[in-house]
Amino acid sequence: MRKAYRRKPMSEINVVPYIDVMLVLLVIFMVTAPLMTQGIKVELPESISEPITIQEEFETLLVSVRRDGSIFMNIGQKDWPTSLGKIAEDAKKILGSNPNVKVLIEADKMLPYGTIVEIMEVLRQSGASGVGLITQPPKE
Figure 1 (tube, one colour):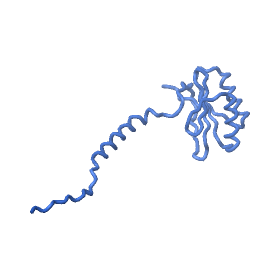
Figure 2 (tube, helix red, strand yellow):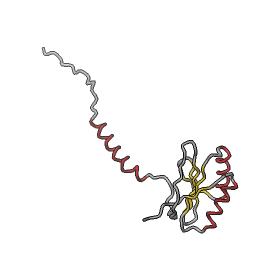
Figure 3 (tube, helix red, strand yellow):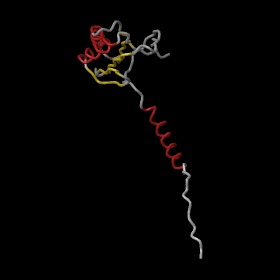
Figure 4 (tube, one colour):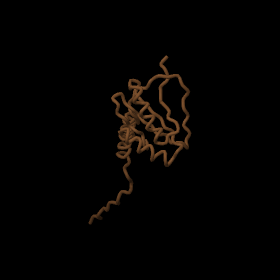
């Protein structure tokens, strides 16, 4: 009689399919990462000025205004659409809890001057000791 041959269970894992999946995910993340830039697209005015230095212990409150007048407030690495009344509310809360927050405005160069001044006044009344304007260096 012939002895029955028993198979031993295979205890090795074939990792080749997992490496393929990992490489596909790596390529997907490398392609999509540059597309996920933060911020609002604003055409900044040009100005010759010193770059600001933001120290690590200070947080930054960024208000962005597009050409069409839509206002966004950067809270926690995310830009949220807002209005003047909501800016006053949120800025009071943020500046009340941390008065060292730097307040910056990033506005399109085609906006009327009065719109920017109005936002600056709302931020000042909310407790901002100083409001900075973000510009870009002139093209040479």
